[in-house]
Image 1 (cartoon, rainbow, N blue to C red):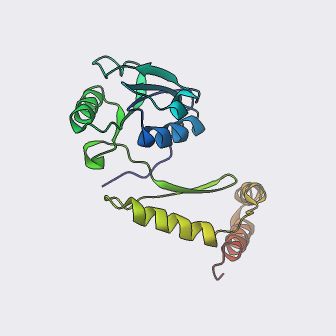
Image 2 (cartoon, rainbow, N blue to C red; image 1 turned 90 degrees about the horizontal axis):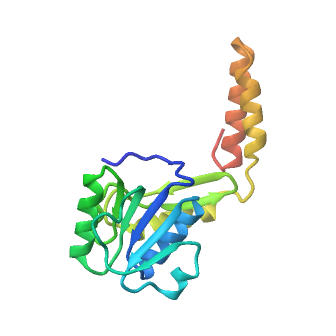
Length: 185
């Protein structure tokens, strides 16, 4: 069973082994999350080289994971991916295996973002197309502008109250949120 979580890894090092299309997609995700990224591959795509990453155009070597918190094995060579994953596991790192997700301990979900709201979806299996379809459905149904800041302020105010006033304020907020996202009160 997978543990659903959001991690704050800003400033931490991610090592991406592979320089092709999968690496390019994942590097964008890592950079957006604020990680520092090193890419290691015999050939690195020009699109990756143009990003804010450290590129090492050479084969993966033992020791390349030193200092990393996150590792992505996304080459087109299963043996290299397996070696990277084994090395990462031995170091207790978060690792994703692009060719066989079950070998890693890190998965990348499909996500929907609306301002500060982020929803992540995974099937828990090898069905990324289902997660992507569900993401598209959520994108169609989620309201574009949710007043998260106002709701947080109302919640903070409500929890500062006591007794029936507190319950009334929280129930009113719950009611307003449900209506805003299209649910019955």
